[in-house]
Image (tube, rainbow, N blue to C red; front, top):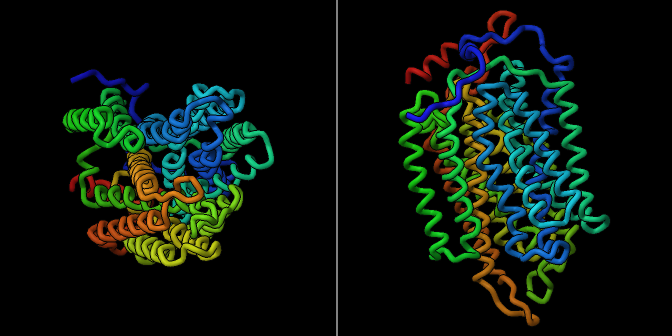
Length: 510
């Protein structure tokens, strides 16, 4: 067996036996949740920040359109790879420490993009920005460790929803900057926000005392990275290269082969990067499947709304809207996600997160039904997109609650990192499917090739069907039981907040 990197010093006590101090370790405990949510929102904005810029990148940098596409692809890749890895590192070595490092990487990547117009430097900076996506699962884990039981569900609901909120806000903000300022300005603003996040975390957020036992699994990390990189590059570039091209098929075959070898190794490692035995439990496996499908359904809404309203009126369905207007179409959905996060937490507390996730998937499917029949009016398009975003808010709020009730508390960040990874894989698959549909279901109008209305309607059908598939996966989850939504998250004994050892022991013996 290949050697693993030892943890520095003796391992911290397991979470099941580690009491959390009764007195708050933060000087401002009431600000921990808002600060972490703000960090998550800033990181999520980076995912869509460059989308309005992409059509102009070849003229601004002299790069080819294929190279410009890497400004989005590389962020997806590094986010997918580093989210579960840094989640595991945070569980072992300190979540606040890794959170600060992630925010530092985000700031450095933003500065690189702000000072250069070279496509290579821009891609490097975007890679660093994408790696900071781990902030969200790390923040969820810190909230679980720090907050009293009656605040955990609402806090993690908001933290998880920042992934969708930031994505919705990033598009209109970037569009406004593109219309009124030099395009480097948005990267300078990103760097400033990253530094502000660093200062706020240093000032407000304490280090969690909860640690996972074991050693860092370097071979498992490299195997996971190789598998994900091969898979996601094939998915995101397959439409450009051709799905049957040797390059696409070779990458897919290599990622499958490496993934099987990685899985074999992880099952035989004492302290694996991903605990596949825990991940194979129905409560965890089906939650991750639902996360992948929800990520697909959510991303279709973001991808096609702006493009659809920008299509010229000569197409017969396009509205000829500006970049700013197209970005603003998603802003009501982002505001709805902010408003519905606490509602989702109440649903999870009253009826269980499984019920909340099932409701969310159903709402998303209904939203795509609305979009299918109302694609000629700007206000009805915005209404349909907002319904889909509302379902996304409830789903993203319920997913971490489902994960945390099914895994030991010492693996919270790693497990939520894996769940966030599944959302990213779903988004990558959605991007590939949408690109293929819009590129092949076309017609010529005014001397230009454009997607037909049926292409957009087909996307809505596919996304709505994916939301229904998420509903089916959710219904097969173990049923919600009284106490499940609170007991596995935190327990309270007398005046001291402790992790529920009995629940953890029951899980580990299952």
